[in-house]
Image 1 (cartoon, rainbow, N blue to C red):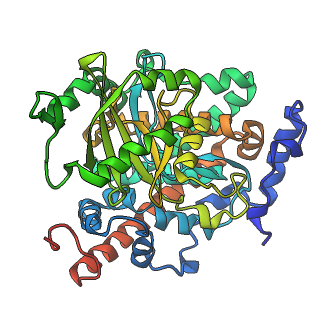
Image 2: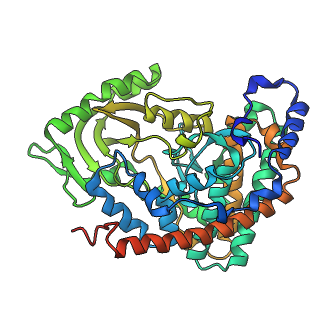
Image 3: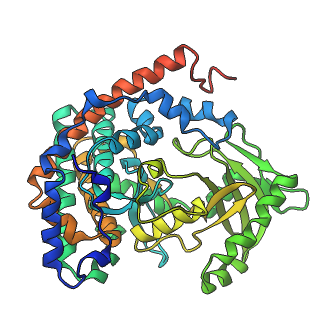
Length: 457
């Protein structure tokens, strides 16, 4: 077997103006890995212990918070999957790949899709988590999203036939969208996005409704109380939120100077119009639990103009050690990796997206809430799962078309039928593997190898 990790071509390797040659190059990559081979999980060649891989991924996290992460993962196989990207990264890395690279979301799953306000104020639906972003084989994103569709489908009451259909529809849409994007002008494809007016499914509509209702004043009411002089300050809401004072608060505020330097001039001006009021610490997500996550409350034009910045610790992508030849190369700041990866994938990212450092750790900086809405699993009943799969296929294809070569990927995928069938088969198999890993995880909790929040109180 050839070393599939070395096949990736840089844009300069092929004439950018000749799309036909790039499509032919993509077809040539089928010799490295046949499209039907994407169905294979290669279970017999699996040598990893999922629990050991999971525990090894906890480096540089707050140890006292890991039991909270594991308690959230304990809820269901899909919750476990969300927190176990390190396991799937190890699995994907041991399999052959097409060698065609793009900027990966990295943690592509259905609950990392959501709605938020874009820079122009309009609500958009898009990928919304880039902690694991890195350049890598396009199909790694596709396989992770497809497996998540099956696991989320099972959790929302679908049988495996319906889950397979939704996963196949997702992959077919990805291939069709890649073909469509490859035929558009480059800039038109790069600008493509989903606005509120484009909503055509129950789960997406529900997320957009959440976004319409969400407002920074809601966070102000939820997380703050009047201070001694009437100004708002964060409340202590253990165990998931607490106010930060003293040297830690000072270090967080001092990190804003480095963050400001990374902003474009016009964004520096906007940022300078706000003044910091208070600092808090928040426990977030499932996969992110254990990472240091600070929140700064700012005030703009008076007390009714709050703004919340999230300063979230970033560690190396779970895929990094498997991609030594990634075009990205080493990053001196993991927050910068996440921010630049997001910008590569999305047409419009957070207006105040940036990065900084606090002590030995790297951080991504972004707005905590700007009309954000998330996918609810109960909205995936009926046609919701397939509808969300179609949108996921379009969004991943758009991200890969922006950051990779849609012509090469189009050439590899062809009509999409073989890829869709193979990906759907893989998705069912990997969901089954996740069920097995989940049982191993529960056994590790039972025998004390893993502590959850309930058992570590």
